[in-house]
Length: 276
Ligand code: F3S
Image (tube, rainbow, N blue to C red; front, side, top):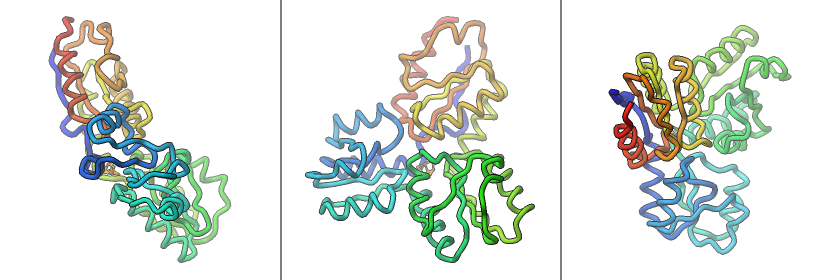
């Protein structure tokens, strides 16, 4: 069986940057998991004494606090500042951008809409910057239920699918006179998603490596599954099952934006030893 990696996969710019910041800071606590990958979080803890707090309410006694890639809510930031801890900001610049847009647009009187998962920390952080609260939607149906004013601004969670975002913006443009659209989906997501699709079309089996709590990994899985029914999401090589590869000629591999290379290498190593 041939093994082929997607043209673009794995760590994105924001995650690489956050890990570097954590490694350089050492002896610190991140407010929530730095990235959505448990194995990498454990490595940072064991090698650099970077621990994970559940949230900002556990800040007491912490000397150095690292804000994770997904950012923090305005209130959360306030709590950190009050605690007197040194604050190191590892928020991805692609997340800072929609935060700023939300703040500015709401101050200018726009009803702000965020396309994304309302329970995701990134969305919560972006939402907190809207002056009078932003509305979070996942579908055109959600949009139809909202009471909106005349001026509307829309941003997207960085890891959503562009096709879905276009559906929402098309609905808004058709139904409202003034709509400001900010495409805040990040390039890393575009590139990894396009590459996953291209590979899934030709592969007989697809392995998607990443945290099961990682939004962009789940997106890669769903894109892959659309083109290759035998798609499997795993966090590490221990989850591989021999039967997935029986009678398969081409195994495609991709990985989420928070999956480190060392995990990907272990998975490839194990698959290449499987006899089919
Ligand atoms: Fe940032 Fe995009 Fe990665 S938002 S953390 S570069 S997936």
